Amino acid sequence: MATVHSTLDRMIDRLTTQRVALGWAAGCVAGTPGLVMEIGLGKGRTYDHLRSLFPPRDILVFDMWARVPASLRPDEDRLFLGDFRDALPAAAERFRGSVRLAHADIGCEREDDEDGIRQWIGGLVEPFLAPGALVLSDRPIGAGRRGWEPVDVPGTDRWTYHGWRVG
Image (tube, rainbow, N blue to C red; front, side, top):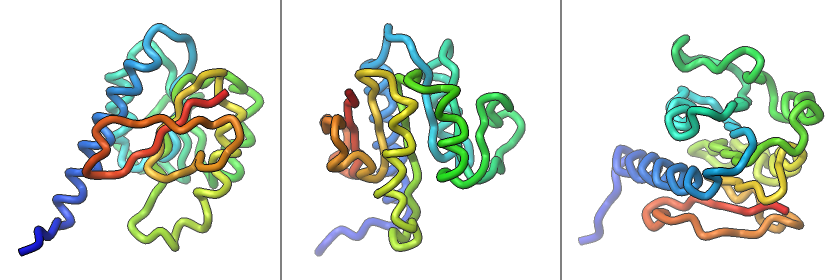
């Protein structure tokens, strides 16, 4: 009899993988200067976890809107709301080359609802990245991008997570 993973099982796998990947990334960038970037605030869970992993670092957060409790809302000068295609380029010059870790949690259950985001989001993130920056994502946003070297992200046996070291 085949094991069927419920929606709850899949969510647990996804969140466990994300937590392991972010913990691993924290170790990879420890002792290096730079900001952290969160693309996709969602419910604020990952942002809150990033705050605990990187207490001395500023975290830039991008999303369409901020529907989170006040305790999970980033500082106004680090929160950029609106379509990624507008919000990322508007902030790029101000933070050019200053991000050490970028995390993009941008997927949805139906990939056809993503409007090709996997194809263009990496190019909008790239100007923010410091040399040697690490990028993690739930989608293959760096696949085939020049200067983005794939890295094996541990703990991804139950849920796929992608990583790249950039320039």
